[in-house]
Image (cartoon, rainbow, N blue to C red; front, top):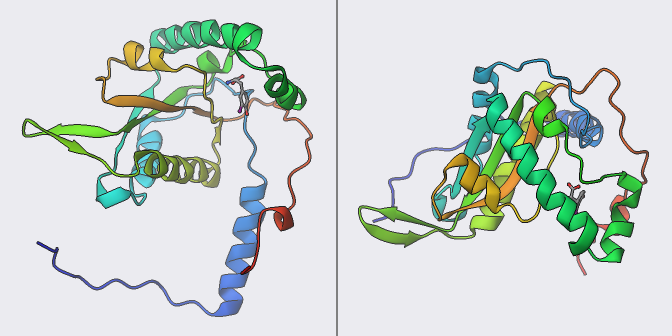
Length: 220
Ligand code: IYR
């Protein structure tokens, strides 16, 4: 049965105001960078919860919200995650990643060492849920990858907007996250996001960014 309909409206802003807000948001968001050097300064749990609540407001296929966030600040678990991630990354960098991939990553200066997994005060691990068991019945979710990606975008943007740095980290394969965090088999590790303040001496690679003109077409 279709749900009952309720009114929806957005604050109606003037075009100059929309333009000004877009310009300021663009300036803020284009200053976001992936952070690999975090401060160990604690971030209160309620703040992380608000940021995850923002991510959880993301749209999703059939409104199923096919994701799970696991927020980890326990140093013992972060250590376990670091050890397991570095083991996979070592294997990847040394044997699994083709030469072209390693060349693509060269400007970023990444390697198999992932100290940030223990230094950042929080690791937010996102899982995508392709199916769920509801009242003993297996039900499919729809567009779980797209939905979880959108929620990740909300989360990363929310963190940046409040002044917290993130890294979208994808050690591969990520099975170990399900094992370490005790999640069930229908939860597929999607993204590992360290969150915290940047270290006082944090640096990021000075790399060119693809111009918008190369990513945007108007009509055909
Ligand atoms: N997962 C590896 C490699 C890596 C892959 C991509 I795609 C990046 O944008 C950066 C790194 C690592 O985290 O080092």
